[in-house]
Image (cartoon, one colour):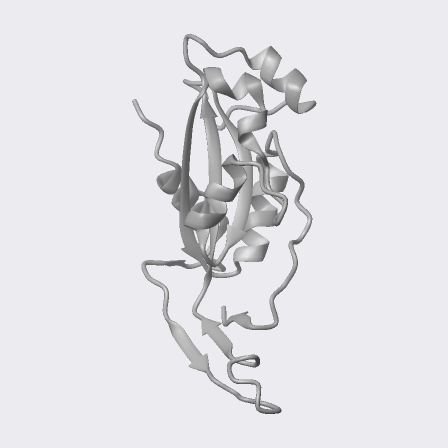
Length: 167
């Protein structure tokens, strides 16, 4: 059975209270401002929401959790009782697909989890999913606290002055 990360995230939102809202789409407004004759240098994009995503490792016959915990220098708890499914990474972004791909491959230009470099993950099935959710910064922090991941820290990433999340 494949674990559905999106359903996990939606259920977690529902369990919290009405403070969070899951969005089915992304919309916004583009504000083009040309200052000092520099076309496009001050354009601001307003977005309706940001996304929160998770990458999970699912135990298989070839996986070794002790090796994984040792290599990551952390211990994680399974998010289910019936099968060993570990949160590997929690993140937030306005472009989750490209950000998830960045976490797989080592890249110097951006901070990432470099999952390809964690040899013990090769025995696990890796799955991911994301949702667009209001208060996405707070929701990602909640996930880090309730389900500590094997990789990464709950520190805030850099904030863009050109993209504004309205929720």
